[in-house]
Image (cartoon, rainbow, N blue to C red):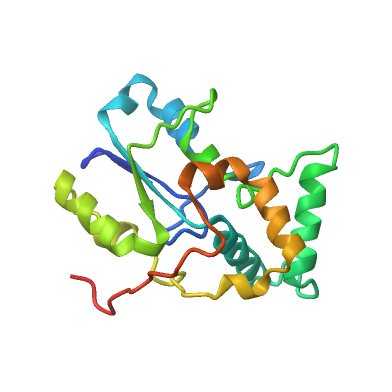
Length: 197
């Protein structure tokens, strides 16, 4: 999401509590990552505040599964099979997985060299406070514009994992987990108000 008037870019990573607006092309949905906006704006991207939200890797992966299941993309597959299938398709397939849903969160926020380009990182488990703090720091009135309350949920994601599926996700997204200091057993902190002020 880009706002030319307020000069900000919200890089929308799927299942992180931020509204999703993806570009429909002839090839399908296009991922609007940092590189997309860089190609769009060129040198002018430095004039924009860039922010995004990230979510615990294991929790986000479960949310991806539940979202796909709600859309009946694979109604008969359980979460364990989903993880195993994705793991095998990424690790052992000669064809890469192109789904922007399965892409590492770091890939959304980095340039082609892997350098992080996002100026402000918000965390799903603290999204309301982080957005309010960003608004105070920047003066941008973005609070109501970017948050997607329909996907905010408090899931006991740990209970869905078996030891081997936990390890598979950890293996696939190790760089992301290390960079954002995600922990499989991190405590839940989600406390969202009913009304937005």
